[in-house]
Image 1: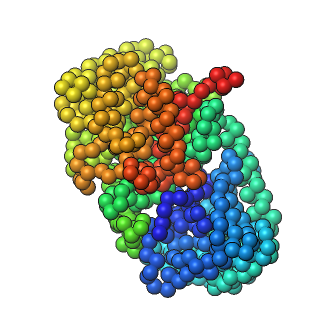
Image 2: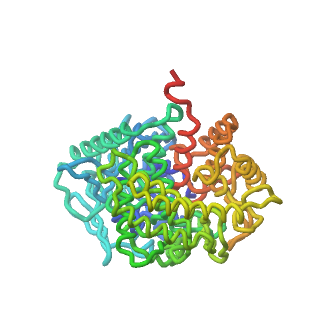
Image 3: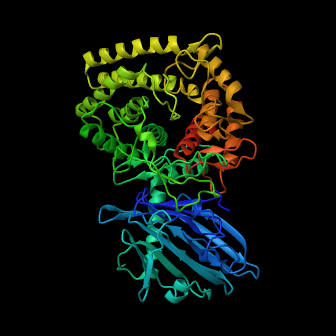
Length: 607
């Protein structure tokens, strides 16, 4: 049965997920939003057809997997090479024989460019005794609907369909790999899977060298981060994970690397998150900026500038493809049964048709740093400000208009407070940027505009009967985005209305240690799992109110909810603490970083 106890590897072009036994159960080619040729994570159907035979380790080997199995495995240990995205899995059998699997997607500087090909490197090394291994490579194309044709060469196997061709290059016995025959591992072997191209390197030396250079690249990137004194390992792992969700070629940042991991069991809340939500990307940029990682922001500004500059419209979609595709029609992948059999498995996301008015604030807040951070190679300028003013005009026009809101409700349009506040933030930040550029008149214009919007929002979103801000204008329901009012600078931390709102949100949305995003019935019923970042928002709100000890205790609880490799998905079951929802979720890793930075003792205090 699938679980989210997974490790993630990647290089800014592709990503892959590896389970606790070292099996690749998810990998898309030839980029992170592509065809999941290893799709077993969302195809739990171990009893169907010839693909369901047990491997030599007694484990069901399914279609859509790339398994390296030690016969009679009894002990497994898995960890990342410190401060890298290289994963190491050690397997030991009942007789004490053991192997190590090193997995990575290569990424390093070569010929003054970042080398990040759509390749997965796997190196298998005997550690002790005479281990017997079995290698099972069963890709499926067309979202599980196509069994590729298989051909072999002297040191490779090709997997081919009309639409896609991939290659496994190896110095293991090709016959054993193709026929899935167990054999004694008496030397290190290497497997390189990906683009159907001949490798020009000596395989053993090349794989060892590329893995080593990839480790070095990640270590140098981590050294550039400004990490808090406390919880450094957790923050570093979260930052690396966010970087893995950044598609380098365009600068887009995906919400997660998967599709259709349900938010709760049997809920049909299964969505494709392999796209760039402007809202999510803002939070990612904000978190990485706090750590001093400006490379993602520069790439994202380029992504946004292209979207805004090429559009004749003043409106923005809430999400875009990583290639800036604006239309992402949703369909069901009929050949895939779903995570634990809980479908449907969706491709595309119909939310692209929605009006989500917070997008204008999300884009402007994400790019504001560019006008103030002198480290950037391409800082903000008058041309970029002109683009952003177009978005500011749209924000002003729609701030009091109904939309689908931050939770993308499909059949309920209202004037959502969060959307309105983000529109206000767009205009407020434009005023600050205008002043920084010496545009005094434009600064006054945007400052006056923001002040007028602030008055309207305060009047319409405050409910005196509940003594709280509420989720929609003139409404009486609450949602977790109200915890962000101080974070966005709409209210100050010492404003009694903020403290009252935080308490009201906790009273309405908190279940045990966790917060729901809302508890009202929506298109799919009443939510059953807590939205992970909402608990982090609550932690940050507690810290802002001076309730630091309470915030730290809850933060430590959240750290214990991570999977064994320090990663988080979108949702947590408040009773069992099991992870649900798409994985790894950028929102959740952002929450960890922000709370750690806010709560940690300073380096000066520590010494």
